[in-house]
Length: 82
Image (cartoon, rainbow, N blue to C red; front, side):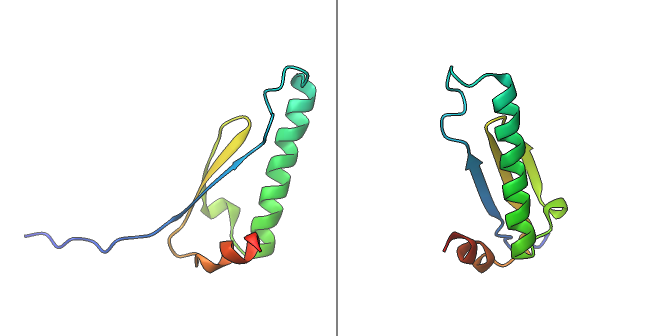
């Protein structure tokens, strides 16, 4: 009989830009906002000591989904929220 692997608890983050699809916002400003979103998120990860490249991230245009490795303490993200 195969032994079950212990559970791994990853942190999942979803960061979204409110009002991104507003009809007054054309393609050029949307690109700038999206670039800013990634710059801010990656800077926050750097400050927290979490390696962005070690995370799985999926772009959703106006949002980004991030799956953080289970080895990263959850407390890091609580400190970022304060």
